[in-house]
View 1 (cartoon, rainbow, N blue to C red):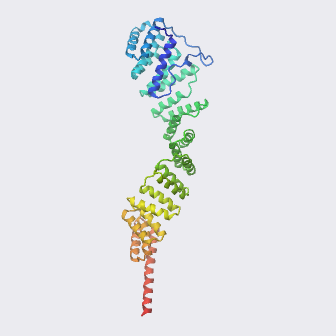
View 2 (spheres, rainbow, N blue to C red):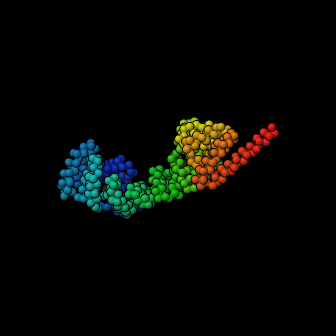
View 3 (cartoon, rainbow, N blue to C red):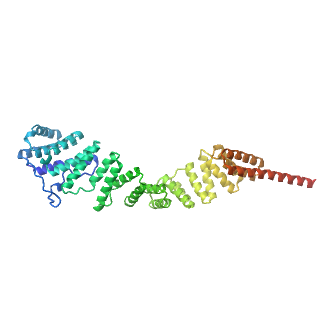
Length: 455
């Protein structure tokens, strides 16, 4: 059997373990054993720790175990390791550290997290008898495993210990461990702690020109500031995301936060850019953009955009959606286009609000019969503040020369306005009632005068 050096055995073992953790947890690990851990970077490191030698007999045992592990014959490999553990007094701390590390890898392959943790902890119990590389890799792996097992405080404690050791050893751990610590704090719902660690990670990455910063880092940081109601920072992060990772959700969220914070102009511009980029591909996007266009007093563009949404089948032909299109036409003073849209919307609606709006448009167009029908439909289906619709109905009836019906309608509207304590509408109703009464007197006088003249 080919002899393996202690360095190679340890490297194979710990690198295998690091890959396993990476595959299962999805975390970006520092490998449990990195070649850098054994490099002689004298400017950064203190003197390498001197550890006990591994005997030739132990080399052979390690080679046997490693061969069995390569063949995935883990039970057979365990039998060898169990025998070695049983005779642990024969081995020095460095040898035992390798034994327990191999145990941990096999436990991990068997999805035995508790066993993996147990043996990695036994590796660290060997103290200065194990190499710095083995110690550092084991500590980092343990921190990951504690996290997987939801032992969050132990994970953080191990990471703090690991960082201290790395700093003492002259290593630059980079930003990834800080991001991992941020994830641990997040899992503990300690959002300020998580925010601090991820901000450190991003600052470190930017200092090393590791740009663009990973998308999921920004995503988590955005969520953390959102939970802390720090909207200025949320906006800053969304601005980064739309720049580096332009997507529909980020643009829509950016516009939404601008609107929430009272930055209507910026909200509109964000939606304009999203529209130009083809990101507004959902019904609510189209309608929200149309609403903003109406708010910015460009209703014709709003109507055009919403109609395009209908044509592209992005918008469903519901009463509410048709009403939005009709409203855009109405605000744009395009009554002829507004009427047929609102007629269709009215037939689909369960309430009478759309018919009420239609009655006003018919009144503007001097289509008094249609105005009367629409107002009657509105009142039959039910509307809020019915006196507004009743006033329109009364005016249409008056123009159709239905004075008795018109007067009754205004009386009813006055009663409803009085109940709602709306003095302005009540006053308008009184004026119409008075006008109708006077007009009747005038008409009676004219009729009498004409009859006297003829007689």
